[in-house]
Image 1: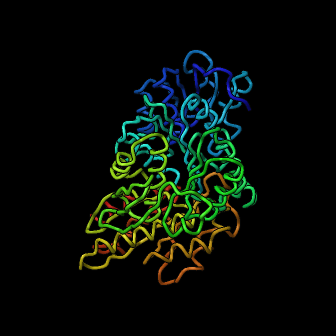
Image 2: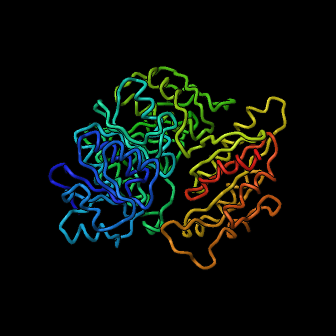
Image 3: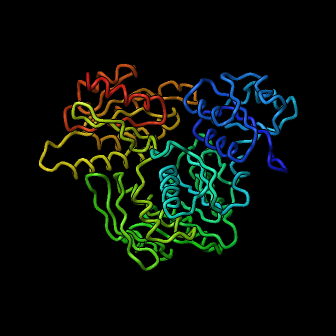
Length: 479
């Protein structure tokens, strides 16, 4: 598959309502490109794209290629979400229309810009979002494409007037190797997506290859608190790539071979989130983050680095990071009812689950102020049979940080059910007095309402349908 020799004037997007696709569709429309597309259902996102000028069909059919009255120059798809026998993809190939991936389109959109790409196993969306907010506050007006929506304006993409383009570099299908960053941030590296890569070694290699794609004069920024990310940085430096580190002072001492750009000197939880003092370029700047967790402060420090390397002033970028008020599905506050707070998070890997639960506990403790120490109640939906089978014990270890766990059945997404693989693989490693399994998604709100008490914090976690539960739990609590 090759990219078009010239930028396409007419683009058709299969699954246009998805978080990643819809964002790129908005950028195309802002650039004056004719955009058509299709999705399985109408949604607020689809309605917004129609209002912006896109022509969108509900349902997939071969004739959707003719929505603009003429064939598109390219058809864009996501191989992870759209089956290869989709009728629009089959029609495109039979009619001689090139089919490209979303990553190919993003690479085209970034041509001629200063590419700032955020990579890593965890934290990409949060770090990219913080970087965007920080740069906007520093007056850089970047273009951006995020795998989520900013709480502030509900947008996941924007065609900016500045020279910088900020985007996530997704490794799940090695698509990050389509990009050529000037500034690349590596948050962490830990085995994942082994259904695609086949081995941890192959997964690690994709980040090595990504570091090799940094343009001459560019910079790789690695988190020294993560040993695997630091190792990628050390090997890249041996190959002549400029490498800088960010992270805690203790981690910096463990990796003396990586010159530090930003060092977290101190960090403490607050009632609203996390406060830190960060040294960057010889100056100390405060970051007062409105979301909890040490992992989020490390993400904020990465955003500070990216903003400074993109020629933002450190003080302005730090102030910008401090205005970050979250991204949807990342410790997103859904509301409070009957004295119980409800949050939703995309966490679907053991490390992410652990980080979110640790953040919840530290945030709860910082706000206690002599009142009842409420419990942390986790409602977790495992994502993918392959991931559940591989990380069952690790999921249980992470979930043990919660005071109570309601464990849903596996959300298979693109995978077919695997005999013997279900949420019981996780439950068997948890204290029976802490965990309860629930097969019926619709029964969860009432179950949470019967369990939760004033002062408790409920977290729905996972990458599947669990995200729909927040409002329903609030309704059940308030009834």
